[in-house]
Image 1 (cartoon, rainbow, N blue to C red):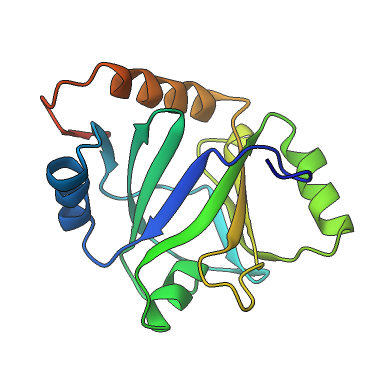
Image 2 (cartoon, one colour; image 1 turned 90 degrees about the horizontal axis):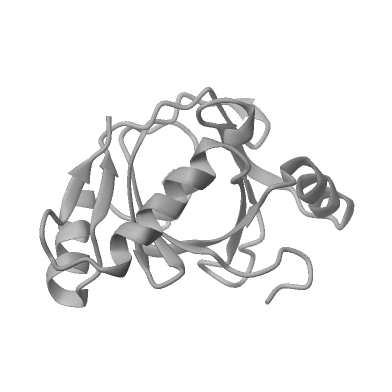
Length: 176
């Protein structure tokens, strides 16, 4: 439990081939079902304060209460994901904390000296997210905060419930 952010709710993996990664999680690890978005539509996305045309595919599944996120960048636009892959890495890139008071937690993090590496919004103001540039000497230690006060929170709960009694059927569910 983080005294600043609360409980880790998601492990985020940046991958070069999201379909191969989902296949691994389904067939080797036994985690699913995966909710797959071929191309995420962001309302805005900024990398180190500058607007970026970053595009990505995302897949989400749960293992108990922990959500697993797979992210594959689809272009070379600036992002922490691209920086991670450009450094020759693939795998666990961030730990995410969820909040219903995004602005309060965001402001608190900034007041403690955190810097936004990239941030954006999906599906309106209650879909904000920010990744703080906390990696430093600890690869994979980027901190994300994500607003779950709106539809994103309900979607995340749906994913968690789908995993509870998953019998292996329909392992990849495309979200449009």
